Length: 64
Image (cartoon, rainbow, N blue to C red; front, side, top):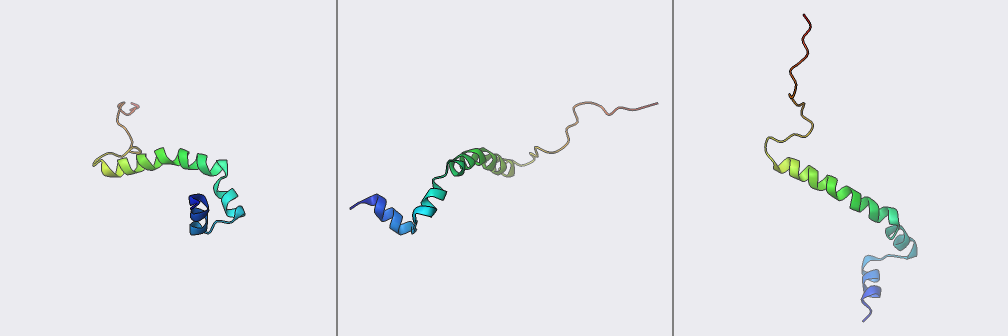
């Protein structure tokens, strides 16, 4: 049994669908978005951690 042909029939992928799926941009966008997805999940799972919260590293500038 040819597993490639079996998988192709299972996913109902014709030539146009396969070429769109095998596009290099498709693969690189999946690789590039995985760290962002992992960071978002980590931020949600870490209580009290907000990467976009303003930091109080320097005292505010006061005139007068």
